Length: 190
Image 1 (cartoon, one colour):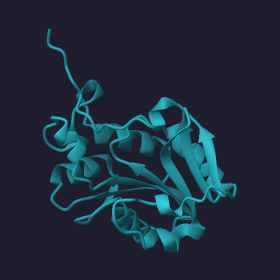
Image 2: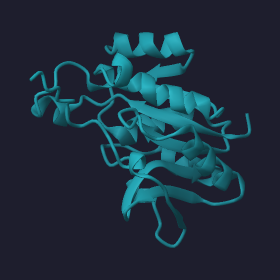
Image 3: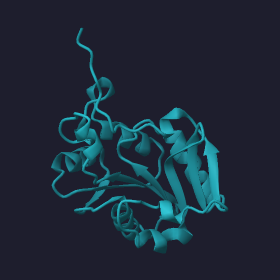
Image 4: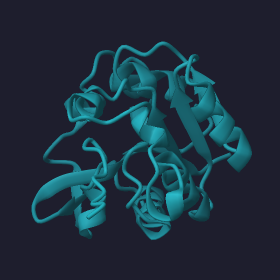
């Protein structure tokens, strides 16, 4: 398949979420309409029409079940960080012509955002990152020429080290491209 695809990172341990008082796996935390956070991310990624691969931990059976329910391909590894997860996903999807790296807890990125980044990759941009209010967001797109470097990543810095200010195409977007769910949803019962 000679098209860019989306790598959804869902192998983190959610330590910031639990330190802030969150219970369980943050990717399964209920959001709008009581849907799990990750379900919202997967819905938008699927609506883009791009190929999709989820990376999660072998013990995250509920995450794997959710991926299966949505018909999303998934691989598992006991990841030591996002770099390792990205590397495993890229090795699994070498046929793609580029990769859109997307954390699973950023459910406010839209199908249009994914399609925009993919289109820019297909037009020859080597690296793309969405921004809002000068803050870097997601997804981050990498052209096929980064496949080898992405497949060798390790640790928890993700692909940040591969970004090159002279090559990076910065695209202004909306607040959803920087919003994540590191803090639990607080409900007011008053």
